[in-house]
Length: 244
Image (tube, rainbow, N blue to C red):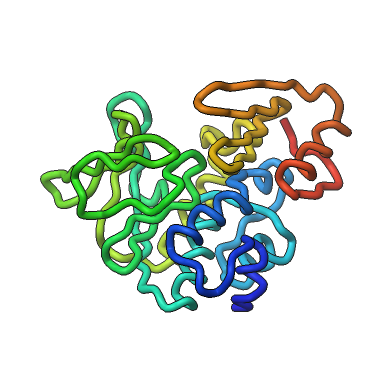
């Protein structure tokens, strides 16, 4: 891996701390599902991930963002376990295993730059109290099976198992997320990133700026305005709009 190019992409020096790397990544590299709506096949091959995120200055979803970020952290001397998660559906149930990929770093930090809206900084894996972060108040709880449930502002987000997995274990679910007609990633193009203490999101044709929990929305009526918003706010240059 060209570590210097990756660090330049997220705007930090080689001696950046883990919290600095985590927040910088979420600021510079958007969470986005545009490939699905552009007809692009998503590959988890490390060279393809580096080309997309670093060279072509795109973003991606969890398997891509956390997959590549894990490689950077290992190059910088950290130990990283890739762990499988079940995302909460909002109806009291969790989805299937491998629905999400998160990272356990140096055995003590939960790091996630690929969940869209999540903590800006790493969470202490073994802390069961409230952890206050710009992204909300987080709390980790244990299940009887030894898994860990991540809550934000009192609501469950996902349940992770501690067993380390290779990135290749996530390939079938990555394909399924791209192709299953009911996948929420297929329903609407989304692009979002941190912007200081705020968040910028482009959902379909709606540009959303969230400041101190307050949303301001602007509908982009023309294709030209939409393409300009991707470039201006997310650094993504497209030659056509994603299918809406």
